[in-house]
Length: 397
Image (cartoon, rainbow, N blue to C red):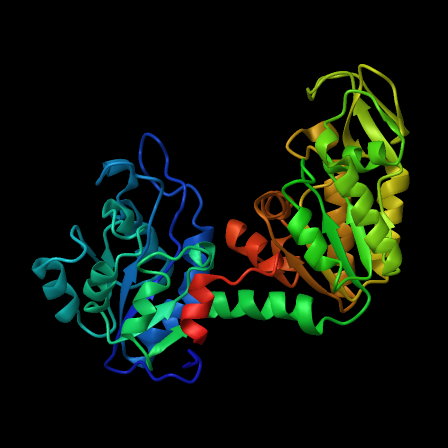
């Protein structure tokens, strides 16, 4: 496997799979959040600075039956040009003679963006002929789309076979792989994991895999109340998965056997309804009255979490502590984020992964204050579960 840092792209056309699945304004179709485009800039710049050219390919949205203007990548051209500072050509076709002519005559130092790959159903199908055709656009293949690394699509895994020697990760995926490896294989101890979110069922595999690695498990979000009820607590009208009470008990039993410190919120900010305007009070998590629901953690839990993270040397954050989208229930998540930042400043390695955690750290303006923020929601979750990601395996094999 080649490495992007040591590869010389001079006079080479680099075919780069990026994740430009970005939100577009419903009316103007302008890019509303350029985070994922910015994440690919270091890889693009490396190739251009070496004296190579770049052919970008990506998907955007979920087109159902062929081309749809609202998902066309032509709407991204201006944003890419602004971020990279280089002319970006656009191909309305993906694998036609016209598109091949554009890529084959692309001047070194310039960029060509292909149309949305998912306008062709062969992309998601992992069609070999489609991947062979795509490979004609480049002399070397670079996968920098971690957000789709868990998909065995034509442009993310199958295509790598067409570049047996000249294939590599971009800087973004390299950082993602290194960050998870630091957490799962070589992290300094103690290792803490904050696992939040609404459902235990969606995090079972992650938690079970982490129990082989971590020293501290911090439970947050809606799943708090499944654990609380599993321990005999009264949780009022809080969200709960009654079918996974035994799952919660097994997790706690395994953690105890492995001497893992488990922090389950001892107090909660409860509300009379699921509303930012609801009446609120702070009570013990295991003593929530009927008609009330837990929507955030309380001050004692915030203190417990801070103490645990303060002594941690490696930290994973996956899932909020409460309904942070509502201002009256944001404090638990915000304070957890601040504690992670503080630990990072004191030398800890911190990885923020999972859509809601990423949304929260960005909302608080703290994304630059942690070690790494993952760009891949589903890919990161599967990686943490210990699953083999097709897009990663294709480059490393």
